[in-house]
Length: 506
Ligand SMILES: [Zn+2]
Image (cartoon, rainbow, N blue to C red; front, side):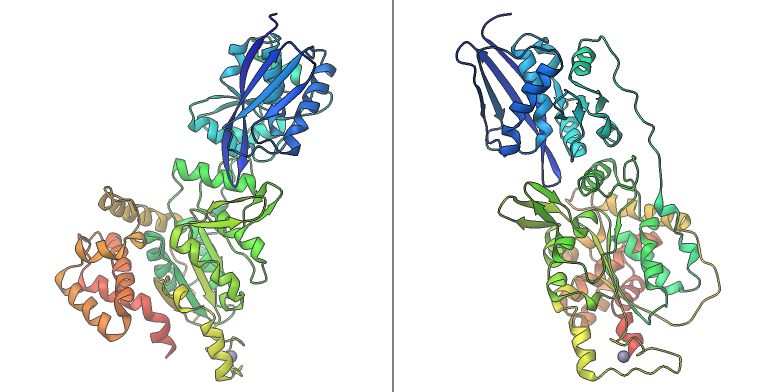
């Protein structure tokens, strides 16, 4: 063993909901026995050197004499948590010749070390494994407690070890990693089916159109008429997530601790926060350096459903505006500032009035004052209402006919989505609801009859923005009907879907 040696290993930390690789460099030289740690470590990382020392000694390995300098890079990235313990310990073993430096240089180590050298699970391992896979590193060592989530990333070959000695012998090819648990597949979307909804043909159809274009949707109807039942079934008719979306969504739910199984999230998530939910529960919270994603981020690439939407606080509804415009939430707290992804399809449901009886066909009568009614409807403010493409009224009529299953509807939605994806192949968006206004009238105009109808709608009641929203919905109708461009009828139906709530309520 030489007196001066340098070794490199790799670890990773989580910031927000994404993982970042950390290069660990350990320099061992003659001198007083000190351990220096540089590169923006926080207190928990500074403690790593103590945990590493105890773990190394208690594992029967040698703690070096002389000076150790441990450098963590990139330098500007804040390092926090105990998850770098193993990477630091492996760097020390490499720098002191106790393991071949080549065996550790291209492996990401993620684990907290117990004082006996055992590997302990770390929160947020999945985003770290995703970061490793995206950097082209396929060798990852984790504790047994993290392996199930890590196996979700198909391109990473994560293995689990029990303790420091096991890691060393595994890297040398002298032992096998721990056996991996099997992954279970639970597809919740299959458990609730659109065929459970009796009647409500128009609402089912509106849900299908909304699914095609990822249109935000508002439903008004009497209590108990089936608004929640309908909304819950939208993720079953949406196309499955792409591979990339699956990784992003699964990482978010791993960090939020809301994964329901050890399998990737392949269906669009459905989040339905209660109207009493706190702002932290909606937009996310920060404790130390750990970010807990809120409902808006957990709905990323999926659906956010607000039942009894006017009951939500003004602040809560206001918090929807930024993600609806930009697809993310900016969180700024003293210990963490950054962006959380939050690109969701919004579904709002509301009673027709505060008491719920305004549309009642029973002897119950509405006792709401006009002031109360106005306050209730104004709660969903102009800017938020502007983002809703489809407004429907759910009638009180109870149907008896069973409709199509989610699987049948989903096939039509997928076929229609493929048409829009082809159309937008050269553009940075993929669904009809995302087309910017400037492109709508220039590239994506309807047939001549539809143009006339849109123009009169602008003047009549829709306004320019309303006509843009109607045209986006018309494209979804055209995609469902396999029309080259929206016909006059497609535009007429889209205008109806934008306003059917008002038309039927009046
Ligand atoms: Zn009422």
